[in-house]
Image (cartoon, rainbow, N blue to C red):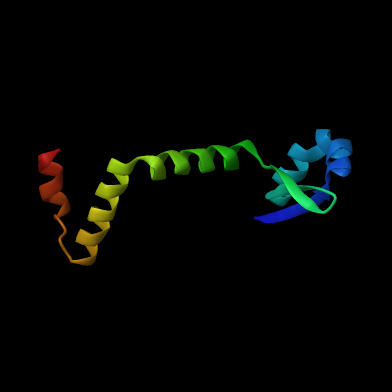
Length: 88
């Protein structure tokens, strides 16, 4: 995903065209004021994915279980699919 950097004045002028521009280039806009980054504009799908990721990462119990599962996979502690299916 390529970022587009633009001054806030340009972002204001181009605001109505940004959704199409971002979709076409699969990009996000880094908006600057006096050369300093102040805003990010991104497609809704990207925002939604980031929000969902933050929600998952913020769930301490879920992350604990995920880390445990990753450890078990690395250690070869796997359950055959047929056995897991029976438990479901």
